[in-house]
Structures are given as C-alpha cells and as structure tokens.
Image 1 (cartoon, helix red, strand yellow):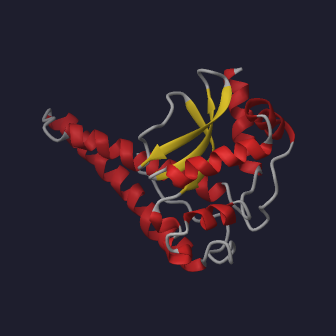
Image 2 (cartoon, one colour; image 1 turned 45 degrees about the vertical axis):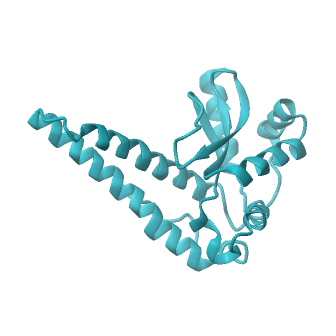
Length: 199
C-alpha cells in the first residue's frame, strides 16, 4: 500500500490572518509530504527485507514507520481541525463531555494551552479508551508520550515550522490564534466515533 498526501480542505490563504498562506504551503506541501514519503520508504524497506529474509535494517525501518505514520496521521487531523468558519466553542455531546471530564470548557482550554506550551511536537485532546474519558496529552515529536488506546480528537501542531514564520518565538500567540480557526465539527465526529466504539 502506498500512502498519499491529500490536498488541504481549504485554500492556502483561507486561515489568514491567523495562519499565513506561506506557512500553510510550506507546512503542508513540504513538511507533511516528507512524512508521507518517509512512511512509504520505510514500508518499502520492510517489504524488501521480508522478501530477502535480511532484517539488518528492519529495526530502523520500523522506527521510520512509527515516526512518519504518526506525523502523517496527526498532520491530517490538524488540517481537518481547522477551517475559515472556525473559532467557536464545541457544542453538543463533546461540549458536555469536556465539562464532565474537565469541569468546564475554560478548564479544558487552560490545560490544553499548558500542554501546547510545553510540547516538543503536539498538544492533543484524546479519548482515553482505557479510562473512558477525555484527556489532554503532551506528545513530543509525533509519538513520544502518546497514550496507549488514545483516540485523537483534536490536534495542535506546535513544532516551530507551524508558527515561526508568522509569530517568531511567540508560541502562545500562535496557540491563541489556533483557537480562532478551530472547527469543532471534525473533533465532535471523532469523539462520537470513539464513544460508539468504546462505551
């Protein structure tokens, strides 16, 4: 199986002024494409090693699959989490569950922002299938610190390539602007899928 990079679900300039056209173009077309290429390359190495019964490079290729597949999946989710029509708070079942598991939307958001300020990669809202609750997670790189059984609901990329061109080192300002374009339709759907599967 070969993996491909889907186009953005909106135009490159659609999230301005919060995220610039230039950043979206670089981030999607160069960085995200790199993870797709890396995943395909690692899978090809594993397939060749299986055919040749030579596994001397398999451990590195397995790490390549883990890193690059995680990068591809999280970036795909990141793009889907935003839209020009975003900026509102969640509604319905997801809003109710956030209040139940965190006490309030404000408490969830404060904790999520804390995760985003500390991560060397991603801040994620996940549905923890072990504890059957929503949980904020700090994920370094694309896979370090992930929760086993965690079903991603909302993803925020805080690698420097996400914001340095627009905001310099002011990560907090970027996080503030992320909330101006968050579109809760996709996270709500992903939450409902998790509840249907695991509760």
